[in-house]
Amino acid sequence: MELKLDDAYFMKKALMEAEIAFENGEVPIGAIIVVQGRIIARGYNQTEQLNDVTAHAEMLAITSAANFLGGKYLYDCTLYVTLEPCQMCAGALYWSQIPRIVFGASDPQRGYSASGTKLHPKTKVKRGIMEKEAEALLKRFFIQKRNLN
Image (cartoon, rainbow, N blue to C red; front, side, top):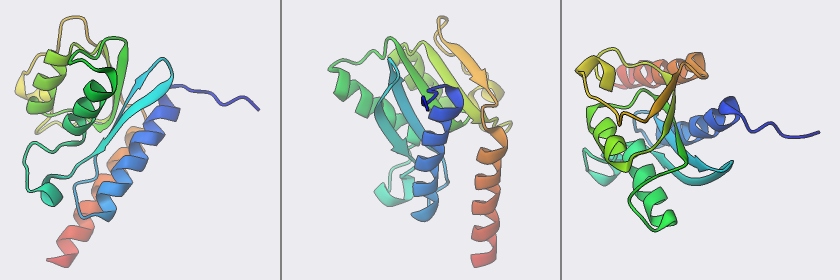
């Protein structure tokens, strides 16, 4: 049986990163960066763990990918992230010149599109891949957090 390396396959990998964030008490958002069908970077939210408001899944994955590639531009890469990037992450993605972003759930309050933040003009975006799974994980996290307080 041949393994199909499509957007759903890679989003499942990003969801696995989000699960790690969940287990660590972080907002469960996960990201991976892929080049030529190969995962070169992973990240999950670590803002609480690192006491750093910039430690979003996307930011950590961008840094890791740039280190792997030996340069700041993420040409030929695709970012898979479980939640629509925020304004800060969208700005970093703009400067990285990443050509493709795939995300799961939309974020109507804090997502880059709600804030009017622009991505690089050459960046293509695909929305809603495994959206229900990403939303369910976020809902489960916030229900659990409310019940603990």
